Image (tube, rainbow, N blue to C red; front, side):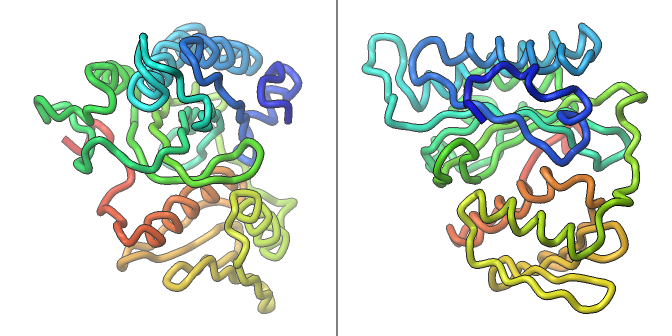
Length: 274
């Protein structure tokens, strides 16, 4: 996909069905936040989402992109770091009681200013990457957080993402069974999605009515029924096949955390965590 192509080239149904992710490269200069707001506006309006949801998403994504510009690409007066890839991602997540639109801003600099989680009660240590901007993101989103990941546009490279999620209206929040995906087909699509993100050593085995993906030592995904399932530190996660985009992103996160030997106890934060 042309990284700055008009989002209208992908229909609202495709954006919202959980199997696709819109991804664009963002400019590495002072227009970064402006471009992120414009792309988000166009994409969500193409989905015919309510104006208030679009407005909240545009406000929040502007804060995330401005944060990346200030703390990664360079503040006003500094020479912009155009050598650091920066991207905007939009996709639908089916998990939870309501479907969500997830927005992430990626940059190819793995280090964080601080290693503690971004929490609103951390006075003086509000991620420091964000200043007060993420307080605004927290106020208008249902969930938000940060994690290591890999890029989507062009050659896959390691980095990190800060993200937020907004609830979809009930009419778009209904998850439909992935009746067209067998366990073998779902495993093949997931393996391809991971390969596209630079995780190329995944082992795939079909065993009767289920398939197994070994992503790396300690990270195995079972594909059976209509769900992907994996267990980490005794915690079992099960997600529908139609949630392919978010499943792949969670597995990329786990892969990168394990590779860094510093997997934190949680990958995101929500108001319920306070």
